[in-house]
Image 1: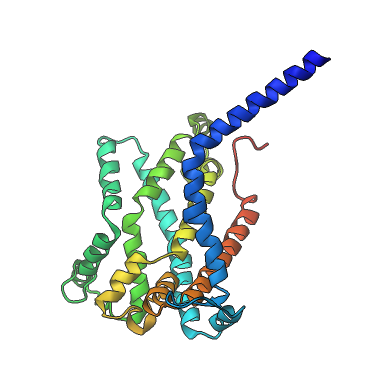
Image 2 (image 1 turned 60 degrees about the vertical axis):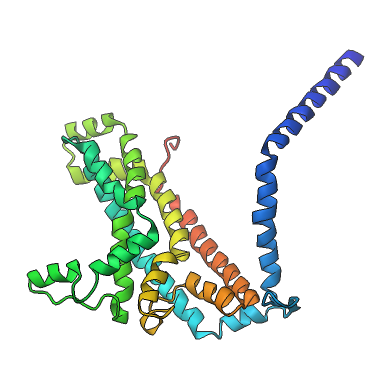
Length: 309
């Protein structure tokens, strides 16, 4: 009995040594997380309950910043612009990326070349890509309006007309779907070929094969892309900022380009309303969490995993 007890103590000591070694090797990440992520998150929540401008000590105001949000017209405008990019942009971009992945998955000569060419725009920095599209969308000498005029259509003032500024950003978004397409392509190549062979024997059409084999097989990837693009769209910043600055206005024509992240940046670093900006950040967190929870709750109806019966 004493010997058995000694073995148990020895095992616990070895486990503690293994744990300490593991913590030692992960300590750089743990320390970085605590200092550069967890501390700013906790601090931002405290600042959201204060009036703070970087130069004076925070003054406790409770929920006043959150109450002020719901009385701020620009808050609603920025949220509307962000929801527009999220709703109008995410699903079409995902559908387009999937369509391109299906084409790039076809067995044709020069397949690798086509894949490389399609992915190249993703390597262009966001600012450089935005400047390129500003030239393409120029109402006077842009290539897009010139192409529209060639078929008898008068192109709009993409960068000036408030009704067309956000659609121009959605249009530009199709150009940068290379990463999503490559991930869809990887998912498509994991679909067992025997499923398609059995479907062809049963006489299923290509459309039927897509909805009964392809889409269910890649639905986990679709869920992942949907969540990631949702988070990214709610943080939409760089492209909107570049387009807005071209009109010498942070919000663009009639604030049509005043996205939530841009307005948050404006409050924090232009007006130094750090408390108000922190409240905006936490409000954004709650909105994104609400959307994500809805998606996860409904995903059981359309997401299928290999281990499911």
